[in-house]
Length: 98
Image 1 (cartoon, rainbow, N blue to C red):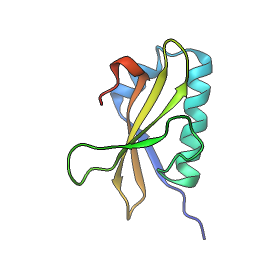
Image 2: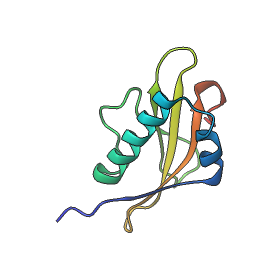
Image 3: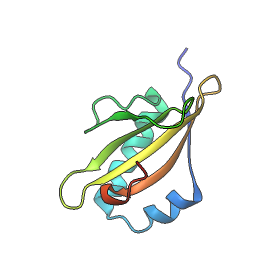
């Protein structure tokens, strides 16, 4: 039995998303669907990778749209047992928190 992940976004992400183009929003929706059904490893997404920082955190990112500007999405696994992911940034690569 495959139990889906719970994916939530912060209020900051909700505000950031309001400024994105339709094409980037569409990619973000596809990413959310992948995270819900497949979990935090967004294999197949451009430039997907883990972000290294604070010990014990599980942060990851991928590109939503390449070009100038490049748009990225960052998320963190909040609770692996309860399958909770929180998206904490979506926007340009230049302003990404890594």
